[in-house]
Image 1 (cartoon, protein in one colour):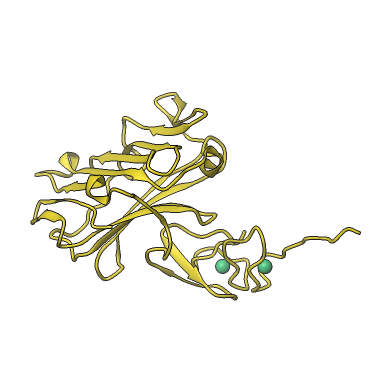
Image 2 (tube, protein in one colour; image 1 turned 90 degrees about the vertical axis):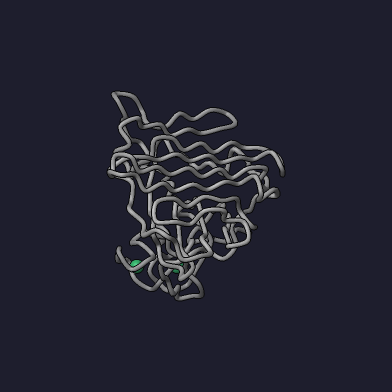
Length: 224
Ligand SMILES: [Ca+2]
Ligand SMILES: [Ca+2]
């Protein structure tokens, strides 16, 4: 006995292999023409209803106090900086990496307390940075490097596989291509690294653990 497992993108039914299905095959409405999530959106239900906003259940850091966020508004855009560290996280398996060298997008999304997307950054798959592939894929980690910071300011994005408590993500950005958020931020801030197939890793920064939130600097450790 065989049972055919088929799913049809665009029929409004969320089936295996479809992170979303909003009943059409149109891009730009949160669920794209291939039923993948668009950057920094969250979808619920079927037909999927999608909107910009944090995803509800991303993997978290077990030691949020070690998961740091810093956003610097420089005197000029060239001096802007962004650092995010997600440490001692829930388990990441190498199979969770997808295929960044060829087809997996990674979106880094920073949302403020109104769920507004203040800093969207995308590391495209299969890109070339300084004459070499931007992505390095190793058995237990993947690294995006772009010293020109041409992809939304990203200069380094590392995802390290590990058992629970040993998984890690580190992101650095800088310069004029970095999105310009409005300082001070409306708290709490949610930072998520997302895949368009649904996987995500996140941390939230509330006034309890944000130590600076001024016109030129946001700095703190995650609350959860
Ligand atoms: Ca479907
Ligand atoms: Ca759509």
